[in-house]
Amino acid sequence: MRKRHLWDQNDQVRQGESPEEQRGIDDELLEKQREINAYLFEQHKDEIAKMGFTVTHTAPADGYVEIGITPYKEEYAEYLYGIFGRDMVKVVEGQQIQLYTTDTATAVHTQALPETNSHAVIVAVAGAIVVVAGAAFILHRRRVVNK
Image 1 (cartoon, rainbow, N blue to C red):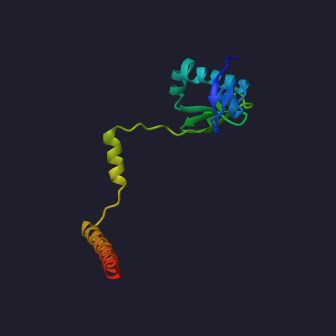
Image 2: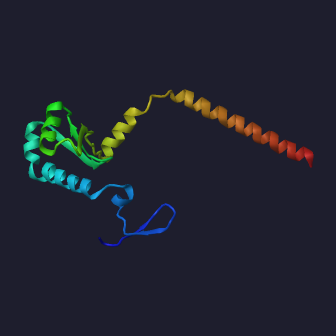
Image 3: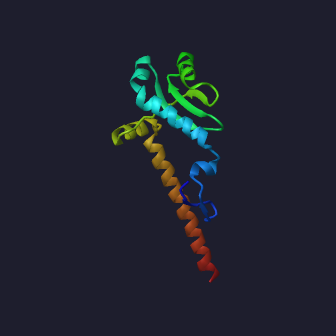
């Protein structure tokens, strides 16, 4: 194993542990994930697409490799369990990642904003200014009187 210099949360150098080892993920589980990734994302990706589902992610978890699929259907999950077994695999509903362009993100953001009455906003801001100005005037007057 190659020595690595890693910093922990106390800024102390930890040698010899990969991030996976620090999190307690064993080599057998990582090897299982590599096997799954090769099968799903390289060797059989076209076959899986023709079946009608997409693998959104694989991730090592607590003693198993999680496989996210969308849409989630029992028949798709059973297909994957038939290939990889149930011992170290758990098939879950995946979430498809959506990449936004600047225009799309702006459109989504502006749609989510509630409509406001601009007159009410102006009145509220003007009222706040009057209150702050009044408080500043009173504090200034007290200082002048106390001198």
